[in-house]
Length: 88
Image 1 (tube, rainbow, N blue to C red):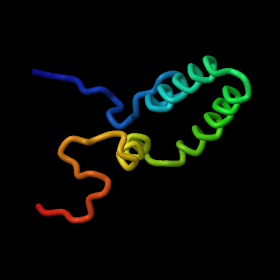
Image 2: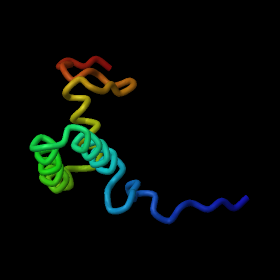
Image 3: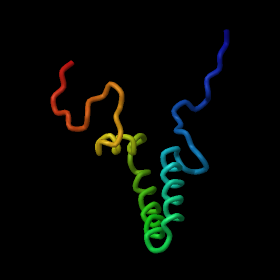
Protein backbone atom coordinates (compact mmCIF):
# COMPACT_ATOMS: atom_id res chain seq x y z
CA UNK A 1 0.00 0.00 0.00
CA UNK A 2 1.51 3.30 -1.10
CA UNK A 3 0.56 6.28 1.05
CA UNK A 4 1.69 9.81 0.36
CA UNK A 5 2.76 12.30 2.96
CA UNK A 6 2.29 16.04 2.65
CA UNK A 7 5.32 17.75 1.16
CA UNK A 8 5.87 20.21 4.02
CA UNK A 9 5.34 18.51 7.39
CA UNK A 10 7.51 21.07 9.18
CA UNK A 11 5.56 24.12 7.97
CA UNK A 12 3.29 25.85 10.51
CA UNK A 13 -0.42 26.26 9.86
CA UNK A 14 -0.92 29.57 8.11
CA UNK A 15 -4.07 31.64 7.52
CA UNK A 16 -3.48 34.45 5.03
CA UNK A 17 -0.02 35.72 6.06
CA UNK A 18 -0.54 35.01 9.78
CA UNK A 19 0.28 31.90 11.74
CA UNK A 20 -2.73 30.22 13.38
CA UNK A 21 -2.07 31.76 16.81
CA UNK A 22 -1.38 35.20 15.30
CA UNK A 23 -4.62 35.03 13.33
CA UNK A 24 -6.69 34.21 16.42
CA UNK A 25 -4.94 36.97 18.36
CA UNK A 26 -5.46 39.51 15.56
CA UNK A 27 -9.15 38.68 15.06
CA UNK A 28 -9.96 38.73 18.77
CA UNK A 29 -8.07 42.01 19.29
CA UNK A 30 -9.83 43.67 16.35
CA UNK A 31 -13.19 42.35 17.58
CA UNK A 32 -12.64 43.80 21.07
CA UNK A 33 -11.26 47.06 19.63
CA UNK A 34 -14.39 47.54 17.49
CA UNK A 35 -16.66 46.90 20.48
CA UNK A 36 -14.72 49.17 22.85
CA UNK A 37 -13.91 51.85 20.28
CA UNK A 38 -12.33 55.22 20.92
CA UNK A 39 -8.81 55.70 22.14
CA UNK A 40 -8.71 52.31 23.88
CA UNK A 41 -9.69 50.54 20.66
CA UNK A 42 -6.95 52.32 18.70
CA UNK A 43 -4.49 51.52 21.49
CA UNK A 44 -5.35 47.82 21.17
CA UNK A 45 -4.77 47.94 17.41
CA UNK A 46 -1.43 49.73 17.98
CA UNK A 47 -0.40 47.15 20.57
CA UNK A 48 -1.28 44.38 18.11
CA UNK A 49 0.86 46.01 15.40
CA UNK A 50 3.79 46.10 17.83
CA UNK A 51 3.21 42.62 19.27
CA UNK A 52 3.09 40.59 16.04
CA UNK A 53 6.60 41.56 14.79
CA UNK A 54 7.98 40.95 18.30
CA UNK A 55 6.24 37.58 18.45
CA UNK A 56 7.75 36.56 15.11
CA UNK A 57 11.21 36.83 16.65
CA UNK A 58 10.26 34.10 19.15
CA UNK A 59 10.17 30.33 18.46
CA UNK A 60 7.01 28.48 17.45
CA UNK A 61 4.71 27.68 20.36
CA UNK A 62 5.70 30.81 22.27
CA UNK A 63 2.13 31.99 23.02
CA UNK A 64 0.87 28.66 24.46
CA UNK A 65 3.99 28.41 26.63
CA UNK A 66 3.53 32.00 27.75
CA UNK A 67 -0.08 31.21 28.71
CA UNK A 68 1.19 28.11 30.58
CA UNK A 69 3.71 30.24 32.48
CA UNK A 70 0.98 32.71 33.50
CA UNK A 71 -1.23 29.82 34.68
CA UNK A 72 -3.89 30.30 31.98
CA UNK A 73 -3.27 26.96 30.27
CA UNK A 74 -2.40 23.46 31.41
CA UNK A 75 -0.49 20.96 29.32
CA UNK A 76 -1.39 17.32 29.78
CA UNK A 77 1.32 15.29 31.59
CA UNK A 78 3.39 18.44 32.08
CA UNK A 79 4.37 19.97 35.44
CA UNK A 80 2.94 23.30 36.52
CA UNK A 81 4.82 26.58 36.03
CA UNK A 82 5.83 26.80 39.70
CA UNK A 83 7.28 23.27 39.81
CA UNK A 84 10.96 23.37 40.78
CA UNK A 85 11.67 19.71 41.62
CA UNK A 86 11.16 16.83 39.22
CA UNK A 87 11.07 13.14 40.04
CA UNK A 88 11.11 10.63 37.20
